[in-house]
Length: 124
Image 1 (cartoon, rainbow, N blue to C red):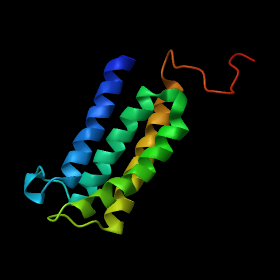
Image 2: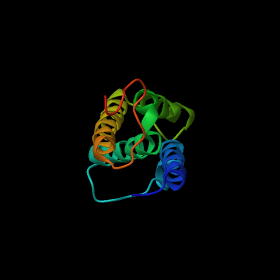
Image 3: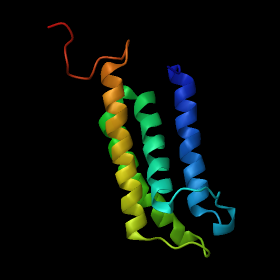
């Protein structure tokens, strides 16, 4: 398992990469072989997974911010003349973020040496 500090750096870099790809001109968008909705969902799932793993005590805050952040990041496309914001794209990204949050939460539950959840006593 990756140490917390590098995991935090990778999480923030993934957010920066997603924002860049989302608001940059369409010609700069990387191309892959996945269907575009799957590509979007996986990107947000991975980013949210990284944040929740990096900040396990802030599961709810990370999850909520990144789910609503998907909507905000999609809205940033309104600033680019070559991009168009679509509600269905935002919904796919938000669903990916929610999925990533659930997977990360499950991983954090079985991860050895995980920090105690706020308000939960261990060994009681």
